[in-house]
Amino acid sequence: METFTHIKTVLGIILGLSITHSLKGVVKIIEHPDRFKVYTVHLLWAFYMFLSTVYFWWFEVHLTEIKHWDFLIYLFLVIYVITYYTLAALLFPEDMKDYKDFRSYFLSRKKWFFYILAILFLFDAFDTYLKGPGYHMEMLKIYPIREIIHITACIIAARTDNKWVQMITVSAFIVFQIYWILNYYMNG
Image 1: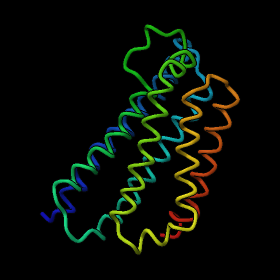
Image 2 (image 1 turned 30 degrees about the vertical axis):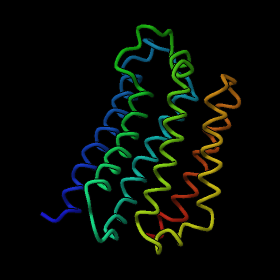
Image 3 (image 1 turned 180 degrees about the vertical axis):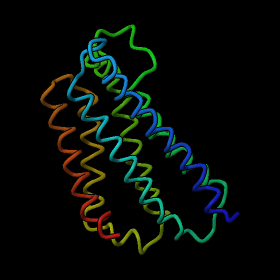
Image 4 (image 1 turned 60 degrees about the vertical axis):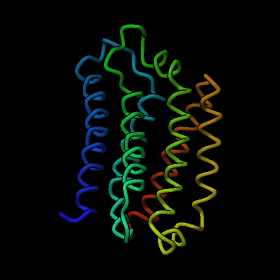
């Protein structure tokens, strides 16, 4: 088994768990709609993370451009994908008994969620660097601006309970992610 295939398998397992956890959380809401009141911002973040995880998994095909693999690169990538799982788990906890609804839960965990999301964007920058100069140059036009805006927005969102700030932030992230996918993902 070649190194990339082995690494891809481990990353795929962790990302698969992330997607499974998110889908399981949404299905629980559908199965038991009266158990906990939903919070639109929370559901939109769940959608954003699902979309981002699927997109990330697709784009990791560019890891084939790495010519020399070592344990530190592998460890970095495992930690990177663990952040996706952590965010999925933060959005859909196993136990909600201490919270009256998803709004109170989300707001109580927003700092964790947004700071880990900001770290995810930092990891993304390093991941982009790992894929080599050809890949990096292709993304260079808007990529640094995207990273700075996303990290700044995460820091702002972590510090406010204002529903409109939260709604605008998640809506902007979704719109930009869709733009990003259409611009890069649809073109191979």
